[in-house]
Image 1 (cartoon, rainbow, N blue to C red):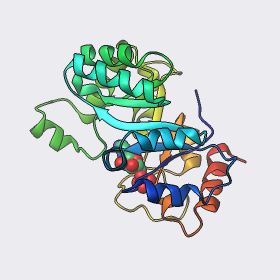
Image 2: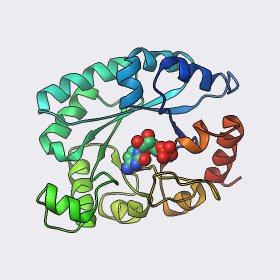
Image 3: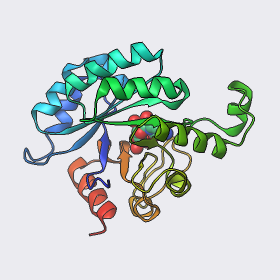
Length: 231
Ligand code: C5P
C-alpha cells in the first residue's frame, strides 16, 4: 500500500497561491496533494477539480464528523469530485464510518483520524472523559476504523507498528509530522525524518512547510522524495 510520492500539504489561503506554487514544478510531475480545511473553505470544490485536471492526486483532509446520513451524503459528493483519499473522525462511531464508506464507494481511499496528535493524554481524559491511556484510545479507534471497513488511519509515525499489529499489515498508516534532516520543526512537537518514517512502516507521509516555504520547493520535494524512497 506504500505510496512513493510524499503528500504535499497545500496549506495556502487561495487558489492563486496554489497556482503559483504548482507552477514551480515540471508539468509532467504528477504530485499527491493534501487539501485541508483552510484552502477548501476559501477556494471551494473548484480547487479539487483544478488540481485533478493537471493529473495530480488529491487527499481531501476535511475530517468529517456528523450524523451517519449526513456524512454518507457528503461522501457521495466527494466521490463525484474525484478525490483519491479523504477522511473522517473515528469518534463519529462505527455506524458513521460505515455510512461514510458506503457514500464514498470503493474507488477512493477512506481513512480516519483517531486522536488528534495535538491532544495530550491529560486533555483527552479531562475534555473527552476517556479514562484510558492515549495509546489505548488510538488503538481502540484504529480497530473500530478497520471494523467499519475503512482503509486506514492518520497517525503519528510512532504509532504505526502497534496499529498494524492490531489491525493488518495492509491497513494504511498515513503520517504527518515529517521533517527532513536538519530542518525547522515549526509547531510540530514530535517529528520524524522521511527515512525514519519508511523504516517504521508508514505508507504515506504528509509534509507541508519544509516544501511549501522552501526557497526552492522543487529541490526540497525531490530531496524528500529521495529520502522517503531511499535512493
Ligand atoms: O507544514 P507541516 O509539514 O507541519 O504540515 C503538516 C500537515 O499535516 C498540516 O496540513 C497539518 O494540519 C496536518 N496534520 C498534522 N498532524 C496531524 C494531522 C494533520 O500535522 N496529526
